Length: 220
Image 1 (cartoon, rainbow, N blue to C red):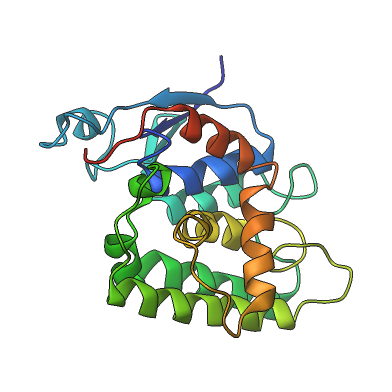
Image 2 (cartoon, helix red, strand yellow; image 1 turned 180 degrees about the horizontal axis):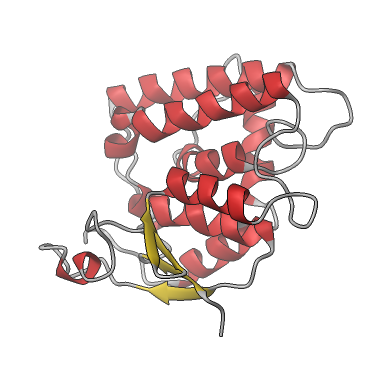
């Protein structure tokens, strides 16, 4: 049994859990997945029992509880560094700075898209129409991805900075949303191709397969 335990919500509901799970899976470090149902936990009692913020994901390791996907990513990079484990941030300083601010932008922004293209609705057979605010956010997000991908070194790999990393894990749920809601490519052809690559990434696809196998959740 691993001393790393990652508490996650339902795979077709908890987009934040997906980010931490993908990062940990990419690292290749053995961990125990601890499912925690968000349905029926409106008062967050289940989550507060394991997480100081009352939210998931939360990583338990060596007597510590580390909540928040981005904090978990940083913890993994510090405690399971390259070359023994795949890196989550680019080696190049300029690329690393770019990857970090993209991850931070995802962490703190795009609320219109999160609310108007809810993650759980992506797995419904019939989805509600996206809101205008969601589509505005989607266009902005695609633009940020397009710029990053256009600067990528030729032959470096299909992800934002070549190899799969933290920025890709952070944007994977957004890719699910944009694909499910069939947001048009517009002026972002590289970004649209990237969306397909990231949801099919080895660190992401198992989560998606499990999410699709669950009963759809219209509400939770």
